Image (cartoon, rainbow, N blue to C red; front, side):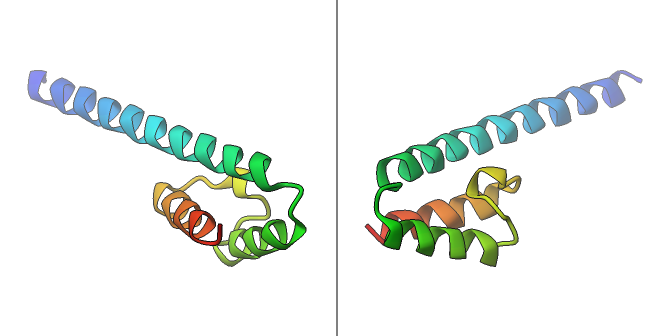
Length: 78
């Protein structure tokens, strides 16, 4: 029982770390969007990329890998 409890604690900690990483990525995405919202060419390109990844809005990204992909793409166009 003790090993099972320890395993559950490790999984819970791992999930918290993943949530933290996702939130940091979403904060970076939000900052990028705020800095570039007046440039409609950039806005259109990043919205297209968001849709390509399956999200209507970049802030709705729920997957760490998708968030990393989106942020790398966004930073590459500027």
